Image 1 (cartoon, rainbow, N blue to C red):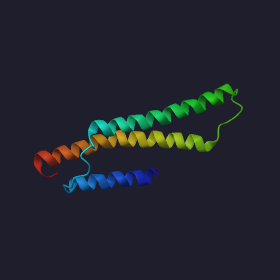
Image 2 (cartoon, rainbow, N blue to C red):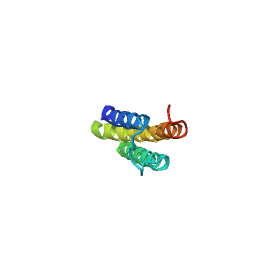
Image 3 (cartoon, rainbow, N blue to C red):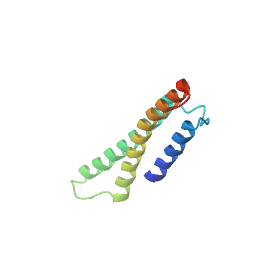
Image 4 (spheres, helix red, strand yellow):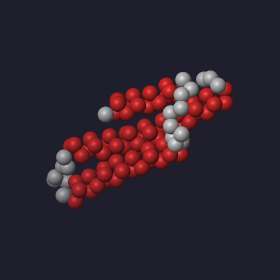
Length: 100
């Protein structure tokens, strides 16, 4: 899943470098906000998993699939957040200089 997400961003980077229009609504602020929302959702889910484990007296481990999913959400959120800055830098340099 993370590899596929990375490939999507690779495609967006390539389109911007080629000078193609990706999406008018795709801005630094919106992409960074989306990354923060996804990361926060994963983080809150991880806190819930930890709270469940503590409340059970450290006896009942939550299912591993939940931990993997919340950490995947956190990784996708961070990737989106930082990729939005890189996309913005590439797009701005392309716009001002006409090349990279």
